[in-house]
Amino acid sequence: MSDPVPSPAEKAAERALALLATPSRLAAVVRDRRNAALIDLFRSDDQRLSEQQISIMQRMMRRVIASIEDDLRARLVGDPSVAAEEELAASLASDRVPIAMPILEQSGLLRDTEFVAALLRRSDSFLLQARLGEIDIPVETTTLSDLVDRADSELAEAAMALLIAESRSNDRFGDPVLAVADLPVAVGTRLYWLIAAALREYGVRHHSPQMAAFDAAVETAGENAIEQHRDEEPVETAAMRVAQLLDRGGQLDDSVLSEAMVNCRLALYAAMLAMRADISFEAAWSMALCGDAGSHALVLRAAGAGAGIAHALIDAVGRASIPVMDHDIEAVGAIGDYESLSSADAKAALYPWRFDRGYRRAIDAVAGVSGGAGQ
Image (cartoon, rainbow, N blue to C red; front, top):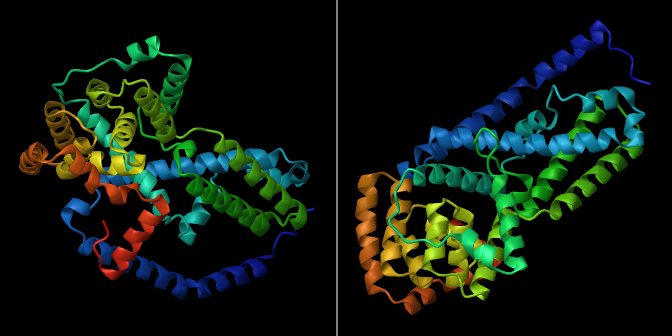
């Protein structure tokens, strides 16, 4: 049974209470704008996101939140205890109005560094792939599909799993997507619980359900959804598995590395570099695909790539990432460095990138706070 409809006087009182909260709400808005202005004012041009990047990241963020919300709402509607609350069930079943996103935006709880990092990497990947597709990369390649056709079933299955994971990266219109499966596990788990809590808040605020039963339903929905998504393989895991199998079969050579770049399969390219340079996928991605010619040269040298292949790959990523004038200056220096650096020295220089991910992030965090060098 739903609560009685408030009288006009009660509604007026509620509006008056809301009005009393205006100064604190305004103070929060002013504080947030001031903090944003402070960050933007002192951010250098090469660190500032473009309007296109911001737009892409915002769209992807809304889509991944909506995807998780839709999943949880469908699970809740199917719960008998929620179905018994007819008005609540009807609200959850309606897809016309998003529930979680407004609550989470207002709370600021989506300002998750790891979540934003995942959005940024997918945005960078999409833009880099689009630009690389317009660049002719003068390298010899081996068609990976030919290797797979001649390989054992394990490599064929891994290659198919990677194709499936890569297919999640864009929707049917070609727009970039960040799938829940491709989020770091900890980030995906946090988002599921945040959105579950937002749905709970909505239910309590607007429908006053039987709380014990409703909490149990929300918790069960969250647990089941999280468990299901843990079974899905992220694209970086699928790419690393292919790279490992190619390496095991003695097929992880420069021509396969080049083919991944020519076909804009950036996750596979990073995975191959990670395998050959003995570093993590995350480190290989950051060094090879961030647009810094020097770091790209270093990881290619550590991977033992031939000079001709390395020059072509450094040039291609540089042209696709940054203005041509800046790229030319950086690329010339990087190519010169490549010629004078041994593969062993390059591998030795990458030792901090082989640390445990948690330890490495802690080093970077402490360096950022203390003004230290990090690595």
